[in-house]
Amino acid sequence: MDFIDLKSQYAALRDNINARIQAVLDHGQYILGPEVKEMEVALTAYTGARHCISVASGTEALLICLMALDLQPGDEVITSPFTFAATAEMIVLAGGVPVFVDIEPDTANIDATLIEAVITARTKAIMPVSLYGQVADMDAINAVANRHGLAVIEDAAQSFGATYKGRKSCNLSTFGCTSFFPSKPLGCYGDGGAIFTNDDGLAQACREIRTHGQSQRYLHTRLGVGGRMDTLQCAVVLGKLDRFEWEVRRRLELGEAYGRKLQAAVPNLQLLAVRDDRDCVWAQYTVFVDDREALQAKLKAVGIPTAVHYPRPLHHQPAYAKYGRPEDCPQSIAAARRVLSLPMSADLSDEQMDRVVSGLASARD
Image (cartoon, rainbow, N blue to C red; front, side, top):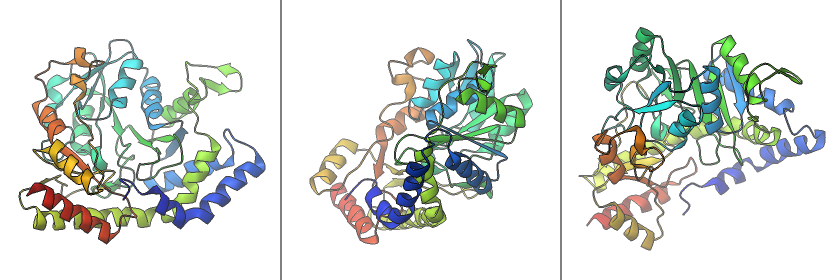
């Protein structure tokens, strides 16, 4: 089986996607063609946010937001060390300093109760990560940010489609940033991403920054980047949108079924906690194990793929070690040693899930 089954998804959507791609090939507007605006309008309607600005990747979305906030050299951005490197990478590339705050041990999301203690006069923003498809505690984070006049950027690369207290991920704070990398809950067939905001001025800044800082053609009013999402990738997302609500529902169902079956078959297995006031779209279905390498080897031997998201926290990565002490963020260190992701996609069959569950149970014996 595939770790993420994109082939079955394409088979179900082939006619929609092919027609959308052919339309772009026919009109030939490969950069900022009509599908770009169409996708942005559709996604604002989906999230409820006022503005959607499509960009070249989820990584680029984070950078553009930091630039829109006018991050200055030495400004601090509070974030989690238990995430993909892009989160801290963009802070550093924008001239900022990542300040790492530990995670909740059961959700693997940033612990909102620890944020206020690390705020300084140099703090500019908070960048929580909605890991594995579950939104971080955004109300608590926003409350801290409001007390200190800080912006909040939700790194929602893995959580598009998820809800928090009845509101959609990406419409919960100053900015929401998502990725359309092919393996994400809503993916294209290359790189792509989007920024969401309700602030008109910040939205305009992001639009200008993504096209080299232009407020109009050849009038460069600010520093920018080449950060546009190409028309073909927007067309792919549009081709997937009709099925997306079903895919989100299916992911929720699969997550519930995985949990129920794993608890029955592997009683001592620690599952990722999902808070009562939110859901999880399971960009990765992740569990905690103590014998990860041995389990992975046994599962691989019977044809069950696994992955690790992520094997070391960012302050243990050579590029970011200077932003923290090795002993900092012990919950992140512990999680990095124990997390194991199992096959997950909206097209995962019940039979495939049963095979994964029984395989894991046998490997634990």
